[in-house]
Image (cartoon, rainbow, N blue to C red; front, side):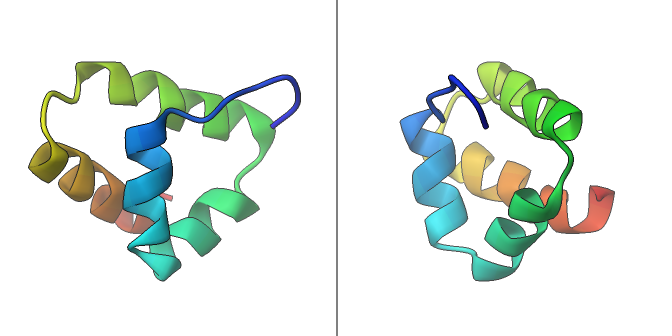
Length: 59
């Protein structure tokens, strides 16, 4: 993503889930921004892990 820093929690959760990382990497820029925007509501590590698992199903 151009001129963008991925939130640390999202990056760590994606690194722990290769399938979600692959899916996220293949998304168009707009959808990546949507995924990142959705992380602002995540309040715990467990929620972030679930959020990342949902990327696989949602996209």
